[in-house]
Image (tube, each protein chain N blue to C red):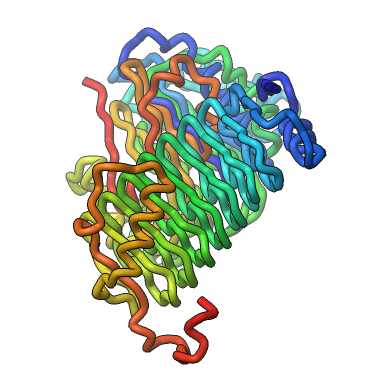
Length: 228
Length: 299
């Protein structure tokens, strides 16, 4: 189990070591100490390893992640798990703006609050926020699920495409072309599955409201529905 | 880009370390603003004496000229920190001394960068760590300080364009962002009798707060009113003789973090700037909400 102390080791050396791991590596659990708010920690990891970061991180932590599990025991700066492809990223504290931005897949769990623009332009990622999210979240969100146990800030889902936004608390306001939708069986099943993957129990799908696109703003054609 | 650092001590325990804490924060923020740096620090002082911080031109014998001027004016010998001098003036003679400095031929080109009963203000072009070292920031003590590392966008890389900006006694402001209506606001403030040293947008924000406070608003209320009158994107950190406040624009364009412990409130544009502060592991760390004024006051 390699332990990397970022007070002594250069960030670039850590990231480079993570990128050079062979596919059959036995070094599947990495501990990162003293992150000190540094940017781009554990970016672009593409193997099913676990990286546990003991403290607050700066910008773009676990960006472009695929397959890896990255746990941040602290707060995360702007753009955590940005453009994640697969795998899982968990933040035990709060996340700054643009958490999970443009994410294609995988699961991002934020145990605290997330600031503005959470899930902006998300393209298939699932994001679960135990606390609340800031303004302009899920702006132009294309697909995936954003699940919020707390409240959502202003202009939720502005110019949204086909992402699903589940909010348990209040929504300050909805953005252009975002409306509340009836939750059907499939939505409910998907919400429960995301909650289970995020290891959140004691929460009922019935307590959430679903928001999505009114499909008036973009050229939606029903024949393309499967593409989302 | 730009970087902001702010420290406001709630207890006296860290007063002797204030300068070294601020100096470390500014060095980390070099990557956000390598053009120039500056800081205002609130140290010792008395109510009846105003400290004028002067920036001197790099000409031969300028220090001797300042000392000679102080003697002529019957003032104490100033203290010198690189190309800045701090001279103490009795409140009642402030205007006369300011006029003397502006009109003196031997002090030609000397700028008054700040004035305050406790505030001293230093700024210069260069890498933040070098600027802090030049002025001996790490050896300074005080109750609160704000600092800035600049990446110029709205006006040239000059010492005049560096932050903080001070437009009133013991008042100063640092700004990350850029304002879009500063020319109009500046004209309005000039009609109210304020004068400006630069064409910089941030100086207008400082002047706006000075005007509001002059008209009777508290620092907190002045910032609330600025939400309506200043347009653009910004994170402001502002200090007065006894106050410290933070405000972000309504869309929170610029990053900002606050860490609070029982001993201090610290502001940093990025967490990296806060990472080495004493007791940071146990601090409450949060992002200030958009369009929300956070203010602290010393008793």
